[in-house]
Amino acid sequence: MKHLGINEIKEIIPHRHPFLLLDYIEDYEPGQYAVGYKCVTYREDFFNGHFPGEPVMPGVLTVEALAQAGAVAILSREENRGKTAYFGGINKCKFKGKVVPGDKLRLETRIIREKGPVGIGEAVASVDGKVVVAAELTFMIG
Figure 1: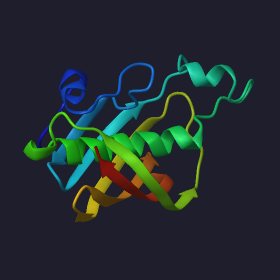
Figure 2: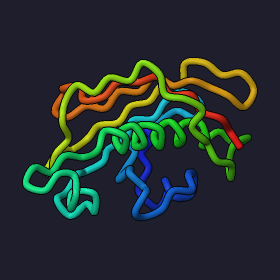
Figure 3: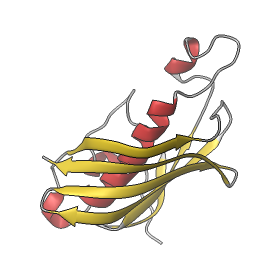
């Protein structure tokens, strides 16, 4: 298994606070997959308004966290170092559960197709083994 801490993640993807949504990478294979985690705390800025009295992580941020895991997989390839992975599309996205403070969000994105600078990843976010988001993410390397 290949592990990455926050400083190593920041060497691969350009995201920074408050938009870096990965805490660590448990395992990855350049160009193939990445499995990471976001430890969700009540101190996240978005909980102030989403929703007062019932804090829920916005689903679009869970999708973004999955995309960042995919970006680690793609941008860790030597030929992609220093580049940015942009969203090209989100397909087959299903929200199946809530992410709340205290959750340890598991983020797994597997690269299933690539053609030139465009690729597709299968992405699954889960909490305690239960899928909360599943999607197919298209990326473009810039």
